[in-house]
Length: 402
Ligand SMILES: Cc1ncc(COP(=O)(O)O)c(C=O)c1O
Image (cartoon, rainbow, N blue to C red):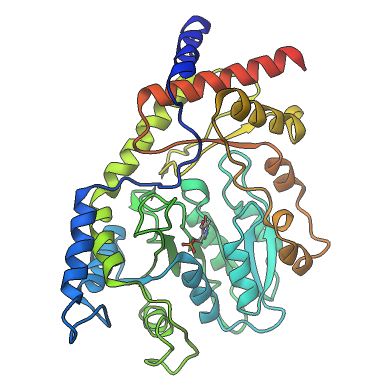
């Protein structure tokens, strides 16, 4: 952990220099290459008989490169991850009462996709160390109506895909067979699991290239990856009014300009993740031994992409006390921290009503203890030191005055 004297010097620096303000609104790094790619794609579209659509080479190239990167047969570009999650759920053709198991510690997108496809959300607990869907708890919640398991690769780390696939295989559905495992990797592009990239395991995986994500396609964008030919055909068709498969569809296409920029960002992605990891590992050392705070965990079979640097305060500081630490980080040191995420049913009334009466004590406790310190591939050592020194100061002063 950073010594007290060094900490004072680092924090004094923050009086004169503008410190890192909070979780960045651009998750990757943009340079001249992205600008050139965007301009070239616009120039390419200017002939009136060419334009921006429909099936353009840039989208095909981006999809092929992404499929190669993840190691899958198909990658289907969409305009954001949300519609990709909707497609995955609609593909299941859920009937009223059909259940999909999702982690309670979650962003709203995955459970809303279940609801949107006419299914019933079933919350499951997460592992308190990794914050990933807990396979044992999933197994307890499987019923004859379970149609899918829907893990989220939370905050950049992989969900335990093999144990989840084993649970799924042990409980085939009487009509539909093996339960599919579908991954939401919106926050985990570039992460790894058991020697492979996230996005390879399970029926399909959905990625986001939204402005805050590990790679960014002009603010919005997403990708579905799969080895399943029928699902790939369904997604390709559904993203353009379902014409090719005579299914329901709407327009969820990615633009040519986004795809051109996506190709450039994808080539830089491993570098972004390496830079995020460097910040995280240095931070692990600077915060090591800080009493009352558990640092992010990286199981040996995972390669964490550190979309977020997720800490947990101890039980005794859950809720108000965690909030007080966050407030002090912002008011005194001008560093905004995040709570990502409390149980999704706590943040959205629609989800709470949909799953009325279902509460998950372990997840609720975790939601009261999460605190994410800002992280970014372009963060300087000085910014990282400042954030760590500020956090130690807040935690120690809180401990002294409580
Ligand atoms: C876990 C998770 N899933 C899905 C999404 C939706 O992504 P998009 O904004 O690309 O639709 C997000 C976006 O913030 C997310 O964090």
